Amino acid sequence: MTKKIRNLCVVLGDQLNRDSLLFEGFDPQQDLLWMAEVLQESTHVPSNKQRSLLFIAAMRHFAQDLHADNLPLLYYPLEQQLPNFSAALGECFRHYSPERLRVVLPGDYRVLQELKTCSAQFNLPLEVLPDNHFIAKPGEFSAWQKGKKQLRMEYWYRQLRKRTGILMQGGAPEGGDWNYDHDNRGTFGRAGPGLREPELMFAMDDITQAAKQSIEQFFPDNPGELITFGWPVTRAQALELLAFFIRAQLAHFGEYQDAMWTHEPWLYHSRLSAALNLKLLSPMEVILAAEQAYQRGDAPLNSVEGFIRQILGWREYVRGLYWSFMPDWLEMNALDAQHNLPDFYWTGDVDMKCLAQSIGQVLQHGYGHHIQRLMVTGLFALLWQTRPDQIHAWYLAMYVDAVEWVELPNVLGMSQYADAGIMASKPYIATGRYIAKMSNYCDQCCYKPDDAESDRACPFTTLYWEFLAKHRDRFVNHPRLALQVKHLDAQTTEKREAIAKRAAWVRAHYPANLYQ
Image (cartoon, rainbow, N blue to C red; front, side, top):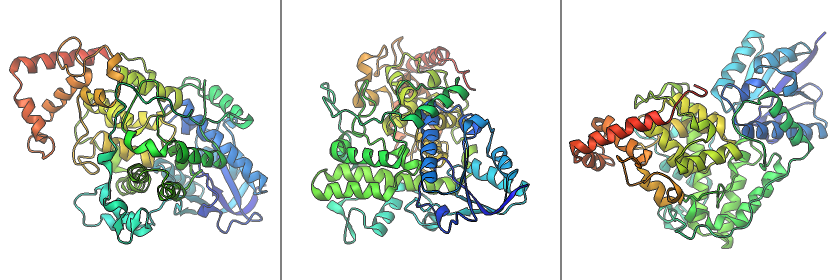
């Protein structure tokens, strides 16, 4: 016999915030909280073990807190081997008969559709609540984009700055400018980053250790490794990491946010995106902590503005774009990219030093900062002309902070230009020279970043010219790429043939079969 309840309240793995609307009006006498670790969330893309462990460990710690507060919770662990949310809810309905299913808007369109299908299957009303974690109000992005031909992040960011008063002096931006990117392109030079305070890492407690065993048991063939794991999995740890970043890293974040260095995965980056995306932290508390550091004189404006723009600007912007264009995002392929993703993306076994470093740290830590994602792993996939669905699956699978609402627009729009310019005015293409400028990767590489055609030619540089040649007609009159097309047109026939021959060698050199 099933027990009748009023609301079955679904807590998803990236909704670990107690100020969620799901808890408003929650009555322990009539309602039941529900959480499930379903296999599909680590297998619909081959989720990095670091990513799966972060989600599962954080969910189990959140569940422990709910139990400690004597809130009724039904929790299904991986050990029950439930394949998906529909199966897990079906198991629940064998014991409980709710009047209604409640959930905060998921961060993944696929999950929302599955919950809708399941509620229809069981003839159960589904109430989808707004997600009050975000700064943008419901409908604000839709109202902002109405009638606009271009949806540029900068203007959305300015609107939120004005409404919230963040880094504002009256109606003017702090310091007189909205954006201090011109001060945020520093490199370390040949001396490197030097000594820094050791990164704050968190030891695995018993709950996380048990979650680690579950991941190894159920997903032994997934990519990534769990030799080390130091991500925050509780709100207390996330707050500690925020305080560490503000004290030890924020002051230098701005100048060096685009720099890269061998065996330095963290540098001055906050590592807070995963905690934000699991909602262990609120975006406004992170923004205010950075703003207060500026007001105290502990961090310069270029660092603080650059950091706040990532959260108040990009994060809110990509979420607006995701829900504005789903499910169309999944079919976008404006550049007709048809090549399979090379195997080395999943293994890190590659002779290009920049990619070996960037992918190696993703396998080890599930992490890469924004320039490694955009201008190393993303740039190569773009120049390779990788099928958008495959590179999307890789980013969603491999990074600990990947939830589809934030990952998909960043990858298909910003990184791959599959959206034909909804997000960016041009594709972010560059030769190996960019990586040589921003890092020391090329110093230790077997390829030469300035070379496009010899047997030591950098694959980035070779594929850059191949990419431009393929898309010449699209960009010949482009205001930001026309000059590069002129350089292409100025090449001799012999040089073009040599580059084409080298490009064929590059494509034969890197096979593409794994996980395809």
